[in-house]
Length: 109
Image 1: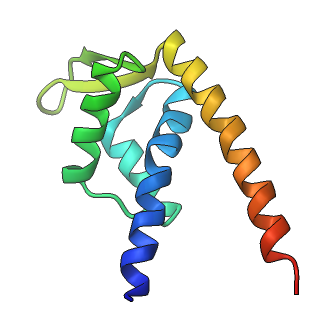
Image 2: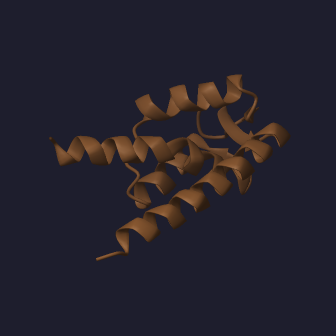
């Protein structure tokens, strides 16, 4: 079994949660999302991020607006919707329960 593949799958499972959390702090541009995820070692590429953002938009969890740029094409800024906030709250509860369960199991010798 390849440990790198398992690590990638673990990160992918948390990516939606992390993206919603970042967007919940305020409007965000895609490159800012990529930068924060990369700094946190969540390692994401545009080919992964854009389809996920489109799914979140289709599910009405996030919205976006176009902002004209003085240095290039318009930019798409994402924000969380009310439905997205509820969804994120549920994911946060699930995350906390998973962390507690994992710690309970992994802290035993």
